[in-house]
Length: 118
Image (cartoon, rainbow, N blue to C red; front, top):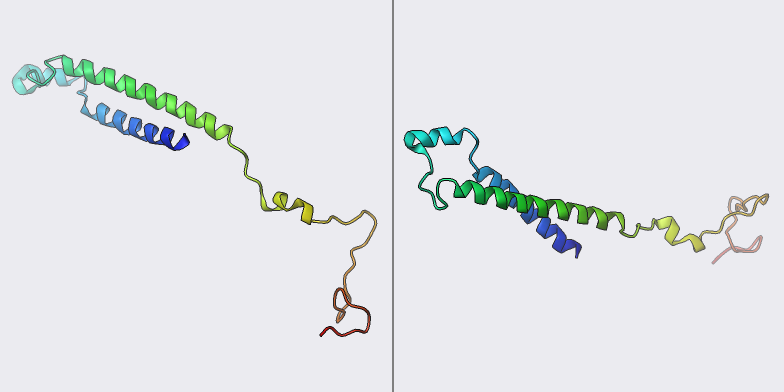
């Protein structure tokens, strides 16, 4: 589900970028008045602006909704467990007031005194 939401989010973002770049600025109408405009375009003189602005609004809405969905999913995701928490039962804390038993130099752990491990 999250992967699908990411794909829709990226496609909507690229669509918004493309549609914004295709739209004419407010000063483009003055250029059309002197013969260099797009009055004979596919959508007519004002149809392209209307279609592009509506398509931009729809894709911007989709982008906003997918942003909110991704935020919700990431905030409700299970928290990762660290290495120490996952092995908590294997770690034995020292009892209070008891010093840690450290083997003396040359003494092997788990062996009797005077015995040399083989």
